[in-house]
Each structure stands twice: as structure tokens, then as C-alpha cells.
Length: 138
Length: 405
Image 1 (cartoon, rainbow over the protein chains, first blue to last red):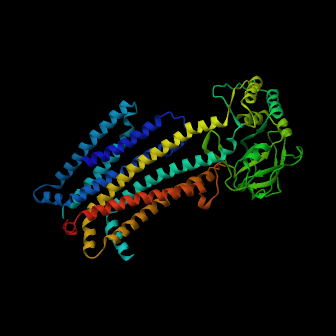
Image 2 (cartoon, chains in turn cyan, red):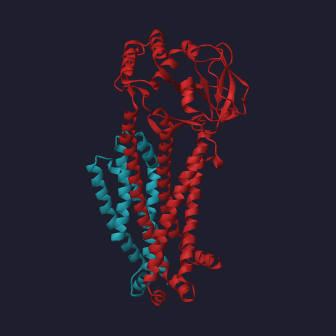
Image 3 (spheres, one colour):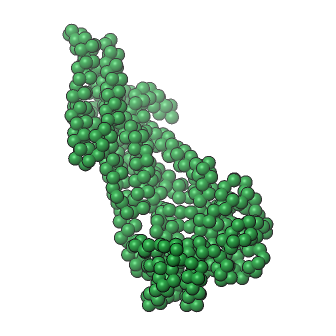
């Protein structure tokens, strides 16, 4: 849980940081030219960075495959396990997103500037949730 | 090699997501390092170039940001009076560029004309690949000897002439190619040292007193903006400032060597320090994430590694395999950075951006190769940290326990 929260926080923080850099009124042309390398590609940089979340989901499911199989063995259903997995992931994602919205409000940024990240991360959760059924038969 | 191929294909590639994760993290680290290295190298090049004017007794003009430019007050007589005063009392280096003309050439680029006087030419010591130095004592009514960039040398070889219907003289002129500048010759902006104008598609026109007397007001006014006064004193400069103010209504600042050094220390060193700090912090974060990604890999592949260790694979061989695997990932990233850079350079040719079009091996110039070298060095550093942490993790777990897992 801590690991996933940390991964989400990193993604939102990166987006927030780049949003913040955009608002800076720098007199240094050199610094502006350097930061432009990142600001110009902000959505791409942040989206690529979210890959660490994919790595997290992947490794977690790999490590839990025995547990999933055992749960099914003792009466759990794939549907229940998948639902719980999605619910738990969203329980971590939503507070982190709300925290980032609060940070946006505090810094006077657009509320929805990081909403695209939520969509990307939810997509990851849904894709990884589909992997749960792969471990139905061990 | 056989065992390396076996471990990569049967263990690493079976968990390709972790490999892709590592590639993406490395890609970000490489991009940051590359951007920072290029900024620093470009600034350093600019600093080296401006060193020749950063000497005692040299003052560089700069229009005061608070000075309002009223074109209604600026006239031919005013600029003539200023240049007369300059010619009578000072040695000065004159240079101005950005006058775009359409001249036929093989690459269909718009050509930028740069005008310079003899003092500027002596100070800069342009390196030529063909031809000879320009002569400033040319006949004003005849052919004007010029230097051209490499991009124009095929269309206009040394000795050929270029006819221009319109010019700063307000009449048609004929230019004679006297020499060809070395490829990628450049001029750095005095006030943005990391920003350069490449001369590959430029023509450098020598300017003498007669030329200046007949030139239009644009050339004379633009030339004043960056004029460099040589062998002068603070008092003489103050008088020049007054003359400019009286005749053109403009307030000019003239910066001395010490002021330029102070400006560099305060403005550029500070910015460079911030770039270094940002790069360092981001690299540390990315290295930590890479170590995390690698340790996740070890956790998932521990059984495979320990089985191989059990059947005779030594730790030293495993170490070599890890370094080899990381080397492949780094190499993929270097290729990606190389392609992005080459495409970026090629983009200037596609956009017909004459001031940024450069020549080089695969389109990359010296500064890019040097930056790529620094990227490779940073990859080696990250590689050592990641591989050693992976080995540390594997060695920490007894082989028997690893197999059981």
C-alpha cells in the first residue's frame, strides 16, 4: 500500500512540479531554455513516468498469484478478488488525487490539470485487474 | 555468451515489463543529462567566444531597457553624427546580422547577411576552409569581397559573384566570394551565451567607412546596439553616451570587463548552478527508482537466479551478465537520444531554418557528441549502482532459500 501510494504521489508531484515551473517568471534565458526541454513535453514525460505504476501492479500480481489461487481454492471468486483489488487501488488513488487537487487549489492552478493522470492510472488498474483471472488456475 | 543469451532470453525477457520500466527510467535520466550537458557546453562555448572582448578597456554597448525608442526622433543626420564621433574618437568593432535575403542556393534556404568592420574581423579571427581573408579596402562601386558559409560554397565557389538587387545601400550590389568559413562557424548572443547563430547559410559582408556612410539607417542603428568600443576609458565612454543621447534620444549602457565578469558570475553561474542542482536531484530520484525496479526484478526472478547459481553459475559470471544486460539497455537509450537529437537537427533543415542548420556526422555536431559521451558516463554510474544493488540483494539470500522461493 505504501509503495503504491508513493508511486502515485510521485506521478502527481511531477505533474504539479512542471505546472509550477511553467508559472515561474524567470529572468534567466539559460534556465528558461533548459526547463523548456521538459515543459514542452510535459504530458509525455509524466505519462512515461507513470510506467512505474505499471511495474508496481505487475510485480504485485506476480507475487500474489499463489495467494489468489489459494483464495479461490478456499471459496473466493475471481469476481470478488478482482473487485476488491480495484476497490483497494482506487482507495489509494482517490485520496492522492484529492491531495493533488488541494495542492492545485493552494497554488492557484487549474483543478483539472492533473485529471488526465487519474484516467491513465485507472486504465492501469483496470488492465492489471484483468490479469487476476489469469491466476485462477495455478 | 551462451549463458548470457540464455539468462537474457529465459529470465529477463520473460519479465519484459521490468526491462521496459528500466529503459524508460534510463531514458529520462539520459534526457535530463543530455539537456543539462548541452546547456552547459553551449554556455561554455559562448563564454569562450566572448572572452576576446572581455578585456580591459573594452566596453560593450547595450540599449538601456528603460530607454524608449522613438523612431520619429531618429534620423539620418543623427546616426551620421554618432558614427562621425565614433570614427574620430574611437576604435570600435561593428557587427550586425539578421538581414534576410533570397538568393538561389541548392538547399533553398533564406540567407542571412551579417555586416562587420575590420576591427570585429580581427578580433574574431574567423577560420576559413577555402579562400583567403577579406580585404576591407575594396572599391565601393565594384565587387565587394565577402565570406560565405559552407552551405553556400557549392552554389557559390570561391571567386564567383552574387548579385543582389536590394541591399542596405538602397541599390543593387555585387558580392564576390573571397573565402568559405569552416563548417558550423557560429556567433553567440552576448546576452544569451547558450544561444547561437550558425553561419552555414550566411554571408559576412565587410564594412568600411565609405560603406557605412552610404548604408541605410537600419544598418547603422542595429549596429549601434551591440557595438564594442576598444581601448577606451570610462570618461570617454560617458561622453559617447551623451552624444548618442543628444543625437538619437537613446540611452545606452556601456559595460566594462569587470561589469561583464560580475554579470556572468551573478547571472550565468547562478543559472548553471541551478541546472546542475536540478539535474543532480532528478538523477538521484531516477537512480533510486531504477534500484527499486531492479530489486523488484530480483524479487520476481530470484528462483531462476538461484537455480542457475546452484547448478554452477558463479557470482562473478552473474555480475558480468548483469552488466552486459544493463549495457544493452543503456545502448538502446543512447540510440534513442541519438535519434531524437539527429531528428531535431534535421528539423532545422526541414523548416529551412538557416540560422540553426548545421553539418556533422549523422547530423550531430561536436557539442552533441560530447553531451552523448556525458550521457554514457552517467549511464555507467547508474549501471554500477543498480547492478551492485541487485547482486547485494541476491547474495543476501542463501541459495537454498532462493530455490525454495
